[in-house]
Length: 397
Image (cartoon, rainbow, N blue to C red; front, side, top):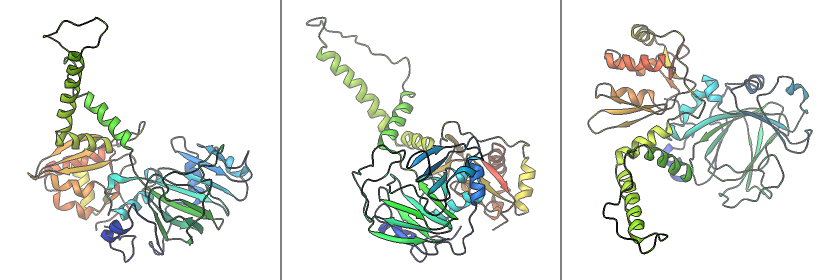
């Protein structure tokens, strides 16, 4: 596995001391770091139709802090001011395997919590204003320099500057100021204020964001899923109907009966731990609407896949690939792939931890399982479905 970016700090100590609690700045977390994307490539991505991108212009736009949404025509970049603007591109890990590989360095947090990699480019003075995020984030300086002003404690009730295109804190005084250079890493817990300003004309910052679904969205998802488990033929009934005191009254009998139905249904759904786990796993591995894995144009045979792995060609996660697994006490496992469950027998279950939650999978991590036909079948299915891809650049480890 890749080295930890936490330097001399043990992952357990990081989780105990800093995670969701206080910021941490690590100088040279990635020594001799080389960015997986440059400014021109990032601008090219921002012109593609299925890529989410933004430009924020502090000065020199139609109005202060103008926000523009992509996709952009390439000519837009010729008309931007020389300074004080920022380009931001989401899901760069989906678009560039080299960027996706960075996620493997953060394996001290379960992979389902990782959201995406956003990359920003800014000439000198470019920034998006002082703000807070509702999720954990690691900010890796990829090129140039950025000055960060950061708070030390989360803000519960922020005041926002009114009538701007962007959400900006109305009053922010940093507790600490630092300058990030290539390879430096800044961790910020949720709702800790920060303000990053480019100090050079080649400032690239990689943001590794984490998922933090709201309780409301989780409950909504569960209820929507639970509704499907209730038989359509189950209907309200009242065989021992008492005579009402008046036709317009809502009698105690009916109110009690409705309460009983709801409580019984909810109690049944909430008491089944396996069903709850299954709902949660399917939910967190379901791709965003409109995102689907693309089938491999030329299907790979089990023999071809085995030969490729034996020759040292590894695998990598496809552009739309959300995997997680749940091990079971009997040695089997359930592998969740893009919202669907696949039951793995005891002989096949060992493949789950080797492919789930990893952006790049060295061939050496799989070859010892290739003599089992079910493993070959599973891997070739995932490759042909576009969930996994052959990675020519990754040799046996």
